[in-house]
Amino acid sequence: MLAGNAWAQSGPARPIRLNPENPHYFLYRGRTIVLITSGEHYGAVINTAVDYDRYLATLQADGLNYTRIFAGSYVEVPGKSFGIQRNDLAPAPGKFLAPWARSSTPGYAGGGNKFDLNRWNPAYFRRLRAFLADAARRGIVVEITFFSSQYGEAQWKLSPFNPANNVNGLHLSDWKKINTLENNGIVRYQEAYVRRIVREVNPFGNVIFEIQNEPWSDRPAPAGVINPYLFPPARDNFPNNVQTADALSLAWQAAVAQWITSEESALPEHHLIAQCYSNFGFPVRKLVPGVSVVNFHYAYPEAVTWNYGLNKPIAYDETGFLGRGNAAYRRQAWNFMLSGGSTFDGLDYSFSPAHPGGNDMAPNGPGGGSPALRSQLHILREFLQSLPLVHMQLDRGTVVHASGVVPRVLSWPGHTYAMYLDGKGPSAVTLKLPRGHYSGRWMNVVTGSAVAKARLSSTGAPITIESPKFTDGIALHLERAQP
Image 1 (cartoon, one colour):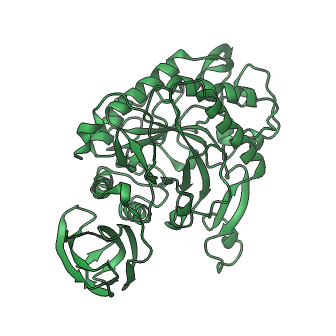
Image 2: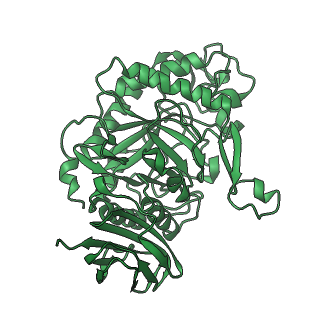
Image 3: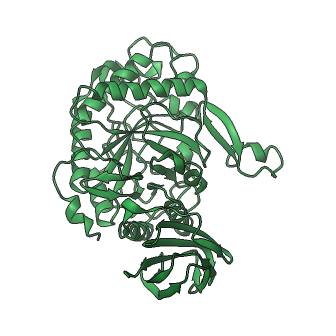
């Protein structure tokens, strides 16, 4: 367990914010932190079948400090959406707890009565506040995602904003316009929903707001491709195409951000706002006003390196479509975080409604997750938190060459160096370090154990060291000896 758990148990705190000395990382409860998790599929509040206390206790025990929740405007289809069989975000009939009260009119597509968007559901806000309080006690930061793309008719049929699911006389002919300002007046209900949640959670310091999950899915603006040498149609389709949100989406996202900031202007606390910018990674052209955190999904390390000059936290906000093995997600996390990322969030399908302790090991959807993976991500978190993060920056020059592997480096130049070599070794690593004596250790990223000591003296000229043997990555932490 991290030594920081004593810190995590402390009382109320001012909201998590950017570290003013190093805005690539967060400042929370007086400490510079990164956010690392392998978490449930975002339904811990809206699905009353989920024992959220046990879920949060599992994250804490596993040494993780972050989770996402969807706030209630989007739900999925049990047993069907994205092939997830046991899905926290797909409540069974009678288990969906929405922000809005039910009417006396039957006919909600997910079971039970339709919603009345003019009336709030007190039970929802009690559960939301209790979840945040429980997470705060455990040192866990929560991203609250207000909206999501609908992805298809199946999910749209379950949305409380679907005119068929409420008694408010709404009309919308094109569901792909739900998250735009051209949604036939539904926007006023969306604004009321955002403002109410913002007011309810204002006292909680462990909250980051996210405007919308994957806005490019319903409102795509093609931005580029990963591999231009593929032949069409594969070149232009997922998972090779990079998409951002279109102009209609961005105008609406700007409105949502303005609702948040204007509502908080009269409240004691102000929280960070995150924008989900694109899949995979792209040089950010322009962020929505008020945004402080840039989220990418299924991200390459270049999502960080291309946008490092923004001087904002760059977050790997979702992964989880690479099968059940641990190595792929562990490598994603090390590559991203050692490139200067602030956050890593993996979907963990071992959490399901009947298994809030994260031990559902039967196949469950497109991804993985397990106690073993969470342990490995805890090792990454410990490695990063052992560094003087307030001084650490992306380092593009210390490694001159690393034979047969891809190096990722953070450094406080002349003081501390943290390196991850992705691939298979041993590797001959040529370094260019300031003159001095250095010592440290090579670390097994699966077990966290020291593999070998590292000692070297530099004259300022390039020097080559040999790594130990490794498979699927190894880490090196070097410190310069005091003169």
